Image 1 (cartoon, rainbow, N blue to C red):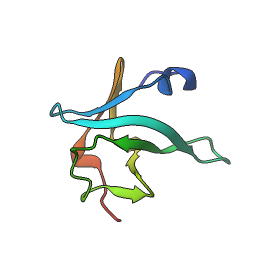
Image 2 (tube, helix red, strand yellow):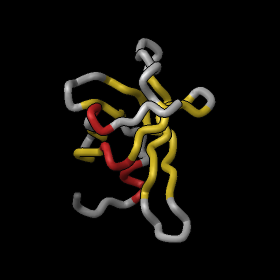
Image 3 (cartoon, rainbow, N blue to C red):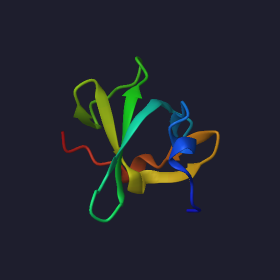
Image 4 (tube, rainbow, N blue to C red):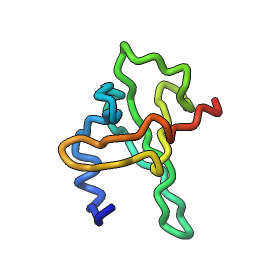
Length: 86
């Protein structure tokens, strides 16, 4: 994936799955302090989304950054790469 500035990621980005499912809005990003690796996207889920298969923290769902397949106007994630260890 090409380089992106953090401000491009956090500018009210809609998170969608490769199948067109609207997951929610990006709220924040979890980053490894020592190495700088991006770990998870913290997403406010759409109210009609079944969140049972997603890892949760409070009212948010966590999507592994490894599931991101594209970042453009939307952040596109591959649902097959999402873990559900709640």
